[in-house]
Image (cartoon, rainbow, N blue to C red; front, side, top):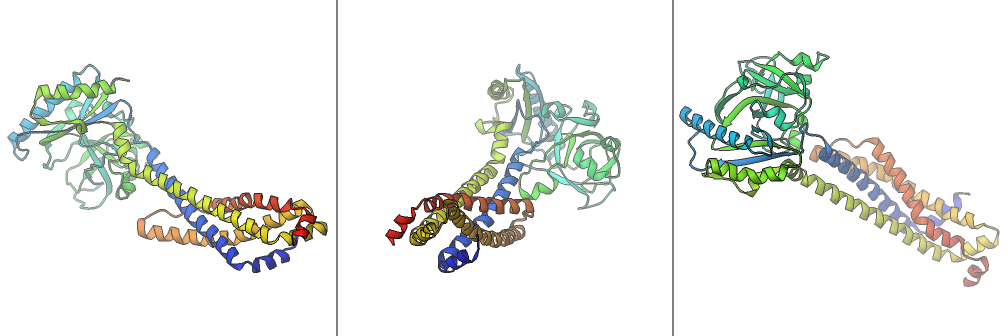
Length: 419
């Protein structure tokens, strides 16, 4: 089939041709970037935290009239109160283990700092999130130890929340171990090595390495060190506390209901309501609610754009079929087969969609560069663009098929008489 008749016909319908080509271009540009954003959001939501998320809940509570944590005597009293809470929770029949904790992955409550291999290096090193706990922190969180050992009771110290102390021992995630000691082939080589926390002059020894532990932050600011976690064997004493609780399988709800009465029995002077106790599933849901909403919104936008573009192609092609009724009849009378008429409109649409796709590729790349500058997004992979081009061309062919098929079914005599 020759292109000259098609190009001549398109020149007579410049406005419609340009509008459809631009619509296809905009659809391609927006959908490519939107699908890329959706993919990133889905990847974020589904990434593992490194902990055993089932049968785990968190208690966040605050004492009323508690002593100050700014004095040594006050710190001791607060630590005694915290230990009483831990004993009460550990004695619950549905509880397996309990650990004091300052935060959890995805909680968006972070204590961050930097690790270095040399003393007194301020504001340099590997950025990390700190988790403070005791000897039960590993079994409570369900972390997988890949090298070294877990904390024991002798490692654990306690301090006021504002105190600055350097722990003798720490555990780190594999991401931290690989970052600090990239020259070593085995993760276990980090065990026994000395590191310095937050520019300190006193070393801390790595006694264990866990396979993975995500940091509490879920914002873009935390993406650069999302897996850099350091566990410190310390109970933090303040007028508030958090406890991570692991329950027996299937007994999560029962243990959550029993926790509040047990803590009030120890000390009723505390603030503890329904929002204070939440399962890790609830924590995950809250952390990624915005990502899920954004992905859903982008998906709806993509569907609307694709639907509008397909409707535009169908409407314009149907309009052209009506305008070219006589020409179709003449071609049929001169021997054109049904398949020739069908291929004519399909090729015509392919030319329009091809021009729109070329413009759309340029727009997609430009839009992605704008998003990179404004929102620190990643570069759009070429595979998304190529897939988008194939998709819009296939969409055009699918949308034009019905009106093209109607055109091919026009009887020659009827079309000629209608003229």
